[in-house]
Amino acid sequence: MIKEEIKKIIEKAISNLYSDFNDRENRGIEILVEMPKEKSHGDYSTSISFTLGKIFKKNPNEIAVLLKTEIEKQKSIINKIEAVGGFINFFIKPEVFFESIKKIDKNFGKNNNLRNQKVIIEYTDPNPFKEFHIGHLMSNSIGESLSRIFEFQDTKIKRANYQGDVGIHVAKTMQIAMTIQARWEELTLGDGKKLEWGKYYSLGSERYESDQSFAERVRELNRKIYTKEDKEVNKLYELGKKISLEYFEEIYKKLGTKFDYYFFESEVVNIGKKIVEDGLKRGIFEKGDKGAIIFKGEKYGLHTRVFINSEGIPTYEAKELALAKVKYDKYKYDQSVVVTASEQNDYFKVVLCTLKQIYPELAQKTKHIGHGMMRLPEGKMSSRTGKVVTFESLLNKVEELVKEKNKDRDLSETEKKEIIEKVAIGALKYSILRQSIGSDIIYDFEKSISFEGDSGPYLQYSYARAMSVLKKAKSEKIKASFKNLPKEISQLEKDMNYFPEVVEKAGKEYEPHFIVLYLTELAREFNNYYAKNKIVDKADEFSPYKVALTEAFSIIMKNGLWLLEINTLEKM
Image (cartoon, rainbow, N blue to C red; front, side, top):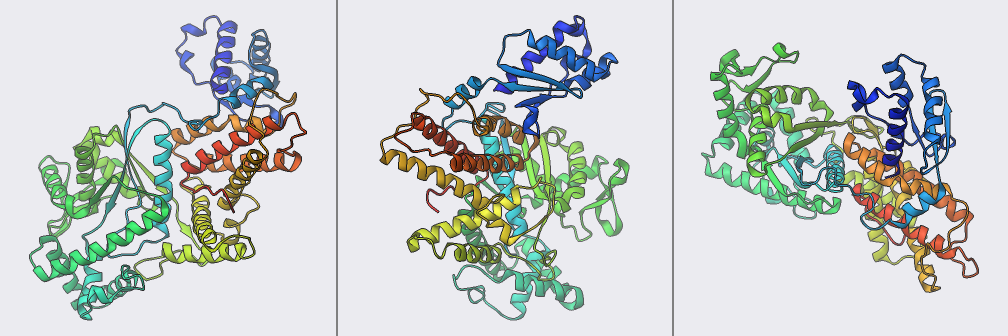
């Protein structure tokens, strides 16, 4: 990459200027080379002068000027260099960008930074007997994108889904159904698969809080679900779980996700109980009120949490400890990434602190990523009160808006149906991934489906436009070629070169939004180029080059959209 070459040039200049630098402890300092926010500030920029200023107790401006002079002595890829306010700005020779574009192929953007590293990433995690809501959509979009970014770095990735198939939420839902003597088969919607989980869970939660007798029956049912001692309860439970999981699979198919492993709370509950009981003997845990087993988080600047409740049932925390072990037994990972809502950040701090004392090597390998919440303009949702925005309801609303936008387009009904679903899902994913992972999102319906920019449909439309150009070039027998290059280079060529660097940064910082921002800017530059240039023109000697440039752009867009799990469309 060009950035790496610039780093070497800077490194050599520093060594030449400061002869004792090689002997210093600071020799290993990181030289940051980045794309400037303002394009007038060059193709790349570095702030290394400020770091050196602290080391050598000198003015960064003076160091920047000295480095500039030293760098200019080298024969390199740099066309022009500026020292401004302590920063050093680099303008790269056009031929360097041309050479870089020539190398763009289907593997462009990939690196081997994590070659042969085993990574397991857990995300989505919808619970059977409850609905798949927009929180699950956020986790799925972020987790799948991170999985693909890892894959672009040559990792051996495994996708995991951890689901709460036991617990008080299951008992609340089932107890309501049993109270009204309903059969699961009769509690379905039109497709015959999706139960009205939200309705029954909400009713169960409300009744649980207000009716002591009902609450006692729920707790007893919860115990029976754990012990599997009642055949009728088991039968009802297994049928409900089966219908839930089949329904989730339909959603995963729409979203483009396929999991390698499914882990369930019911599989780790006994393992978790034993881990905590053993930890109690070792002094990691303590006895709390009414026989509960707790972890005193205050000793570590955290808060106390219950790991086995007074009824002897392991909590989420205990099962989380078991899950780390079960995952590792299944797949000997180098890193385990867990994606959840940021509301669980404090919970995971306690879990990881506990894990560090029980399985220190697994704690070292585990990274928790907490994402923000998606809200509609109406406000926050709650499955307990029934105020849930399901994935289906949101998708249907977005599809209706997309359908309205496409009603006058000259497309077949089959084409319209495919476009509507792919554009709607792309709009949702873009809106989620365009923000830094920890940020909350207020979903803007109109902005999300805009074809004008800063949206998923805009990226899909830009790709479709490029494919249309290439189709036209083929029909007019104009082949892509870099043999005859123009004298001047546009911003489009420069921006295309940055893709591998953006992918690398997104991987290092676990942030897909860098790719979203980059693709949006790249699409804008391509559309500007398209507006100013007639790409397919037999009378233009540079038409083969323009076609080649369009082809390179389409490859980057396809790779970038794949990383975001957004479908490409050749016709819109």
